[in-house]
Length: 533
Image (tube, rainbow, N blue to C red; front, top):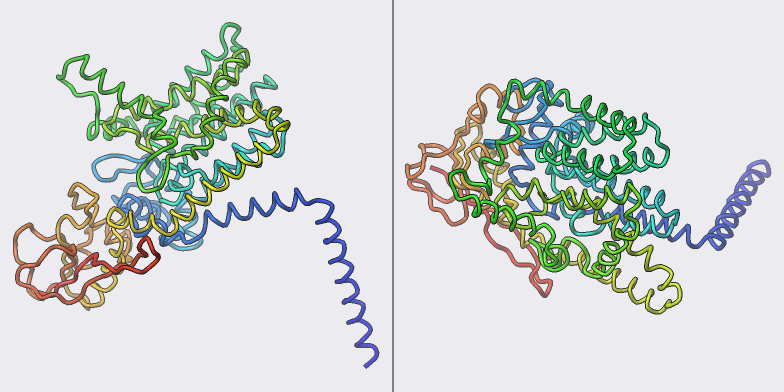
C-alpha cells in the first residue's frame, strides 16, 4: 500500500500549493479578478435565456435564419439564388454579412433559434469589445476601457437588438472595427492601415442595406476631417479599400438595380409629388428624432428607459463639449461628423426614433461618452463620494433594466414576437399526420399581411428542407395559406389566431403562453388555436 499512498500524498501537496499560489495572486490582484468577473458576467448575460427573452421568433428573424439554412445546405437562399450579395425578403432586400456568418454556424451546429440568436449577440459583444479596445487606445486607461466595454455591452440599445436575429446588429461591429483601424492609420499615417480601414468601411454595406448611403457619407466625413491639410496618400489608400470591398455589390446591382432603394419605396418619408417644404419638414423631423433625449434616455419600445442609461446623459453632454476642445484632432472631427450623419439614412423612412435604423450612431455615442467621463475623471477623483454615487446609480439602472428585461419584457413583446407559433406548427403537423395544413391569413399581428412571412416562418419551424421550399414553397410539405372568408378544406388542420373562428371546423387545441404579472404570479393567455376541418 505504501507506494500507492505516497503518490497520492504528493499530488495532494501539489494541489494545496497551487491553491495557495492562486489565493496569494487573488489577494495581490483584486482589481484584475474583479475585472475578469465583470467580463464573465457581461458575456454570460448576453447568452442567458436566448430562447425566451425575447420570446418567440419574429418573421424577419425566421427569414434570416432560413436563408442562412439554405446557404449552409447548398449555397442557395430560400429563392434558389446562388450566393447572393443581398438577400430578397418580403418585397425588399437585406444585408448578407449576418446570413453568411450564421450559415457557417448552422453548418457546424445545425439551424435553430438559439444558434441564430447566439450569432447576433456575439456580434453585440464584439462591438463592445472593439469599442473598449479603441477607448484604451485613445485614453490609455484600463478602467475606462473596461467600463466602456461593460456599459456598451449592457446598454439597452446594443443588448436588446443583439438578442434578435436581425441583420442590422452587425453594422455597429463593422463600424467599430473601421474606427479602430482608422485610428491606427491616423496615428501612424500608414497607407496599409488606411487600406484596411477602407475594407472595413466597405464591408458595412453588406451589414445593413442602409449603409450603402451611410458609407459614402463617412467617406465624405473622412475628407472633411482631414482638411485643411489632408493626407491624400492615406485617403487614396482608404478609398481603394472601400472600392475593393464594394465590388461584389457593384456587379450585383447590375442585375438587380432596385435592390438598394426597395426598402425606401415601402417606407419613404420623401413622397413624390408632395410640396418640397412638406417633404423637407418630414425628413427633418425623422432626422432630429434620432437625437431626441427622450429616445436616448427616457422611453423606447419594450424596455423601461431609453436606448442608453439616463445616468450617462451628463457624460454625453460633457463629451460633446469636449469635442470642441479637441477639434484640432482629425479623429475626433471624424467622430463628430459620424454622429451628425448617422440618422441620415433613417431620416428617409417614416418611423421616428427607430432603434435599428439608428444603430450606426451607437459607436460614436460610446466614444463621446468615454471622452466625457475622461474629462470628468480629475473632478471625480477629488470627489470620491460623488463618483461612488454615480457608479452606484449606473449599476442600479443596469440591474433595473436587466431585471425588467428578463421578467416583464417577454410578456410585452409576446404578440409582436409571435410567441407560441413554433409550438402551434409542431402540434399542427403532428395532428395532420401528413395531411393538409392550412395557415389562416394575418397570423402575425405585428405584420401587415404578407403571405410569405407566414410561409417562411412555418417552413423554418416545420424543418422543411430549403431545397423543397425553393421548388414548391410550403406546398412541398402539404401546407398552404387559407383563402380569406372561405371554409377550411375537408380533412385539413388549420392554424389560426386566438381570436378567429374557422368556418366548417372544430377547435382541437389551444396554444397557451404563460408570463408572470407585476407580482410574479404566472398568467396564462391564449396565443394560437388549431382547428380540424
